[in-house]
Image 1 (cartoon, rainbow, N blue to C red):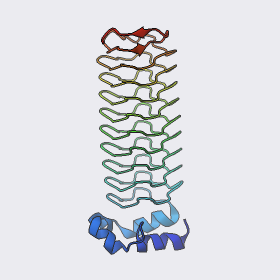
Image 2 (image 1 turned 135 degrees about the vertical axis):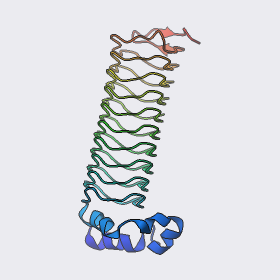
Image 3 (image 1 turned 135 degrees about the horizontal axis):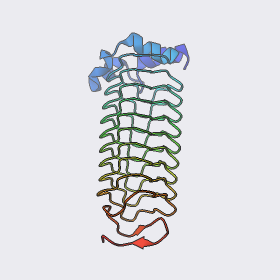
Image 4 (image 1 turned 30 degrees about the vertical axis):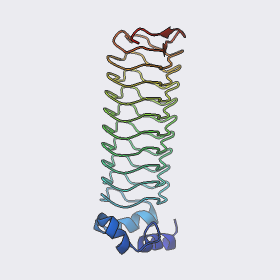
Amino acid sequence: MSRRVANNWLTQGITGFPLAALALSWPVALAVDSSQLRQLLISRTCIACDLSNAVLAGADLDQADLTNANLAGANLRETNLANATLALANLGGANGQQAVLNDADLSEANLSTANFSQAAFNRARVVAVDASQANLSGIAARGSTWSGSNLQGANLDNANLAESGLSQANLTGANLTNGQLYRANLIEAQLEDVDFTGANLREALIRDVNLANANLTNADLRGANLARTDLSLAHLCQTRLADGEISNRDC
C-alpha cells in the first residue's frame, strides 16, 4: 500500500465515508491511536501495538508484522493478512469473517471467542493458540498447523482441515460436523465429546486419542490409522470404519 493510498484510507475510511461518519456506527474507531494505525497501514509493521477495537475491515495487510499486537475486538472482516506475522497477538473477540490468513504465523496467539468464519488459513501456522469457543465455521485451512492448540468448544463445522496438523490439540466439545479432515494428523489430540457427524476422516492419523462420547454418525474413517484408539465409547451410526465396513452399533 502506498503512502498516498494509506493516508487516503485513514482520511476517508474503508467505505469512502469520512471517519467522523464511521464513528457514528463504530464509536471505537476514533479511540484507536491514529499514529499506530498510520504506522501499520504505511509500513505494515506495528509490533506490540494497541489496536483493540480498531476498524481494519478490508485493509490490505499482506506480510504485515503484528507480533504481540492487541487486536482484541478488532473488525478484520475481509482483511488481507496473508503471510502476516501475528505471533502472540491478542485477537480475542475479533471479527475476522472472510479474512485471508493464508501462510500467516499465528503461533501462541489468542483467538478465544473470535469470529473467523469463512476465513482462509491455508498453510497457516496456528501452533499453541487459544481458540476456545471461537467461531471457525467453514474455514479453508488445508495444510495448516494447529499442534498443541486449545480449540475447546470451537465451532469448526464445514471446516476444511485436510492434511492439517492437529497433534496434541484440545478439541474437547468442538463441532466438526461435515469437517474435511482427510489425512489430518490428530495424534494424541483430545477428542472427547467432539461432533464428527458427516466428517471426512479418511486416512487420518487418529492414534492414541480418547474418543469418549464423540459423535461419528455418518463419518468416513476409511484408511484411518486408529492404533491404540478405542472406539467403544464413541457413537457409531452409519459410520464407515477404517476397513470399509459400516457400523450401525448405536443407531
